[in-house]
Length: 193
Image (cartoon, rainbow, N blue to C red; front, side):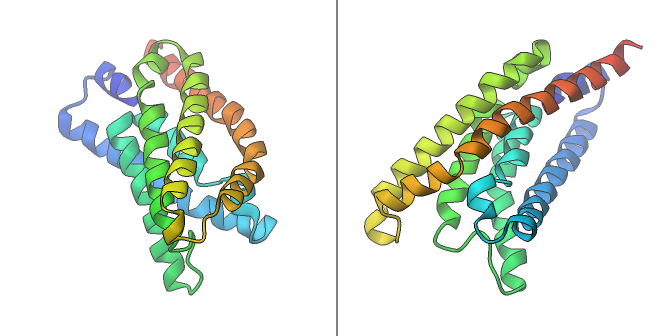
């Protein structure tokens, strides 16, 4: 979506990269800050229940496309881990970090595949978000099962984590598309004026 808007404004390649870098940085900052706020408000289980890092990552995919979205998906948990490790309480925990990197990168890639469709039809953000959640959660389940002999992830633990975040998946499947459609309306209205 953002690529089309930047092209409509006749921005140079350098300017496009600058804007995409700034939007990516904002999404990463949000993906680091939002879980901290959720943990403060909802306690230690708040992250697994509300999936706060997923919102900015999927939003980043919808806005930036797959390539830049993957960057947001990979860097968000890594930056969060490094910052919170320095504070003495790493989030996500090291054991979950590689799974989360892979899951978020896939979710951003899937939602990013819809970016051109979202540019012309804002409602396409709904299937983008829903399919990214389905792909990401399924990928987490499959990879965790494959590597379960090396981790503490048993099928019961994996299923419990997925179930605990179902309300967040439903809510974000509505919230993210409305954010995307709202941004699309604002940006295109400014272009038409």
